[in-house]
Length: 108
Image 1 (tube, rainbow, N blue to C red):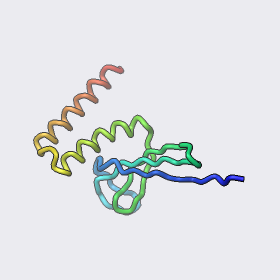
Image 2 (cartoon, one colour):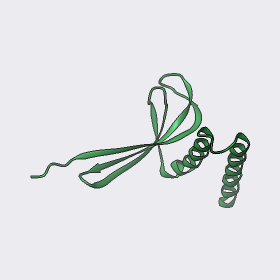
Image 3 (cartoon, helix red, strand yellow):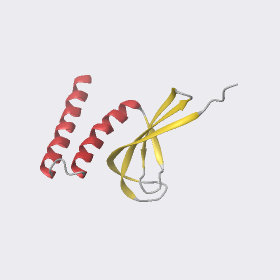
Image 4 (tube, rainbow, N blue to C red):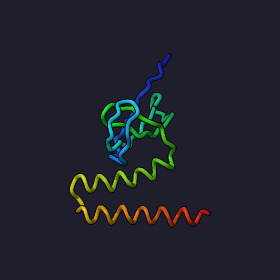
């Protein structure tokens, strides 16, 4: 009889917004993470979370929220690793916010 092996694949996608953690009380830029759970070789579950970098307290988020936060995390990472200047960083964030506002206006 074969035993079922559970494996986890955890990925840090970068920093998003500043949040105040209810557990440790620190105000930090939280991390955007995903975790895939496999039984044997089959993907059985994918979770998306935002997490305090200080104490690892987290909150599960849905896939759509993850996609939004992922864009922000990518922009933040580009700035943090000095791929873009502060001016380019602000421009990209402003463009993202404008895009979100236009898309939300199209829905209503």
